[in-house]
Length: 95
Image 1 (spheres, rainbow, N blue to C red):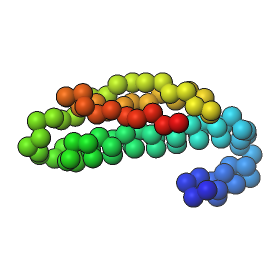
Image 2: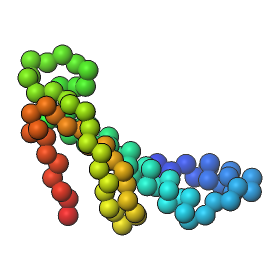
Image 3: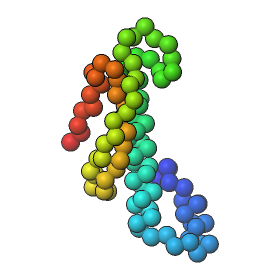
């Protein structure tokens, strides 16, 4: 997989660091959380029609985040879902 640094994993194993499946799963969950948070930010940017911290004539704008816990087959993920002032940004549930 191109996002996991195989050389770093091999280096950790050679140095005697105890790496187990739980450690790998935790790293994967962190990566999944980051991808989800990034994707929702990009979706909100598309929804609003302008980049974060840019000037716009759009009266709707970013308005913080809602903290949610997602249940996945890898365990629970605590994510931050961006929201807009008009509450028109809605994430569709996959699956």
